[in-house]
Length: 633
Image (cartoon, rainbow, N blue to C red; front, side):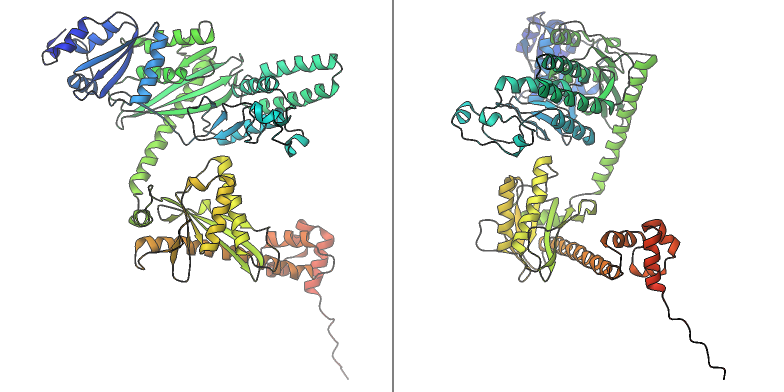
């Protein structure tokens, strides 16, 4: 021990003297019993006592932590692997100030297998600690969608949210739906599929989600042959179609390894000036890249790249549901005197049932994989720095804060949806949704809707409002976002009530507040309040609401006029004998206007609609009477 203990309480000194040599987890505490730091150790006595030895070179962060520490708590475990998992859970729960902060990008979606009878499989951005299994996160949403498409095409799973308890099924509470009749579901809701059979399908889904596509194909092939031998040809044909769909999906994945092994690749890039690092994980299954995820690490001062990449791998496998045949790292933790891969190796051996090699390749195909992952990590750090610069520039405007205060909102309405309906005497009814982020139009998120539920010539703003709200937020529920902080409806009580009705129907009502802004007196209506709220005419809050409302109105009217103009232009071309709607649309789509069609040469139009129709249109606009010869007598 050293002089570092001179100012420490006697109780701490005595604890250090009595520490066991077992593996376990230790926690340093300050004078207020707040946890400063959590760590794990193969030998608690040896590891904890090193913090108070002068000979040990420490970074400033850990030195400050040791100065503040007045107590230490320990939890003894049977193995290093158990200590690794316990350390991971304690860090997540306590968020100690002096630990490295590992932070996933929570905006990325997952695929969830719900913890329930006859589990559903769906996309989500919300991870709940309810026993459900989550696969992801998916940085590339298109890959997740391709996976979900493969699951739907291969497996007959329920998509409903019915209560499929044994009592409900036996009581005949439910009826079969369309999904059963089109052979997308085996109707467990009415007892047509046993729970055992359904769970066998779920196990196959897990194989697919874990990238074991070929193993699943082989399993289905064996089952297909068994069904064929038993003359169950219809079931054999269904299995054949499943195998084909799986092969089609497998061909979309990039081959990155010729040995077709399952391996995970961890790589790290650190920016010491910004005190941040990014770790990237490549998931390779059967030689194919099936997933990539990244994690940002904060408060990395004094931590080596070797320590950080080991933290990444340990954190990941503490909660993993699949373990590979090999792990590749960009840095070797065994080169660091205070770190080694022993605990991680033990954990992987326990979970996999045999030793899982942990390697730091220097050449060949595996080293190339590591370099590719490292390049991705470097790119992520660069993007993070760019986003930080944008955040500094884009402070929350005062009008947004004022609106949140005026409406008594818990969260500042940084993202606002504005919805309006427009028609022309009950005809060509359309709707718009505009999006404002921090009081600025986000035009890439604008959407227009052609209303189908109203009768032509009969204006019905309420029905149109119900349709647009149902369509927009039903999709948002299915995709779990992006959620607005506030929805502004252009209209009074009636339009607001119609919107609220649909929000409740699709299950989005509790996600965000919704208000109506009536034009006559600029009064604000809120659900459940009979009296409106009047904001000061010159207030920034009202001006922001008016800006959103007016933009939604402008966008809807522009779209409605564009549709009417297109219809009018088409009608002029439709007056030409032999020219139908499709031909008119092709000509207008290419030339932009009837005037440009008139000016076009016949051979130009022929390239678009063919020589016969081009001649018809050209002759229609260029026919002239023969000139009459002058009388010379």
